[in-house]
Image (cartoon, rainbow, N blue to C red; front, side, top):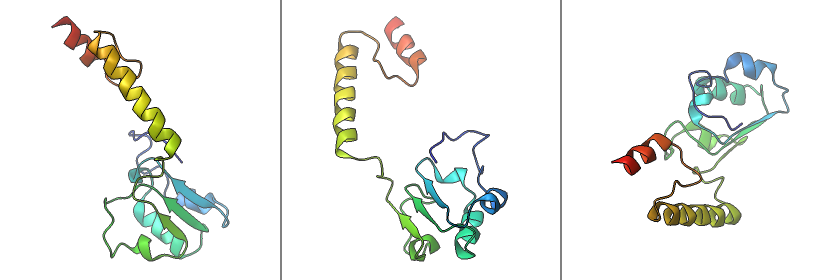
Amino acid sequence: MHVPVTEQTKGMIGDEEFSLMKRSAYLINTSRAVVVQRDSLLRALECGLIAGAALDVHYQEPLGPNDPLLHMPNVICLPHIGGATRDVLDRQLSMVLTSLLKIKKGLKPDHIVNPEVFSERTTS
């Protein structure tokens, strides 16, 4: 799953959702940990409601050495780098460089999260 964190998505996967999954299901979370209820995830993994989980995001980063998720044989934990492929890194670099060149020329960058800030910057 890969969803933004909103009021609607916080804790959206809990006991009820895990009970509806096939026992062969794997939860793959690449968004944010808070979209899955931690205690529900632990219960689902411990009692076999789901087969396992692959997690690129965690409730505490970095994970502490005693975190139970690190010691479960049916869990794979990544240190929040699942999207760091060679292709993504190359494209990110190109996008950042293109944006910086546009800003230097006084133009609005293509990929801007908060355009109101850029507007304020250019009118001041």
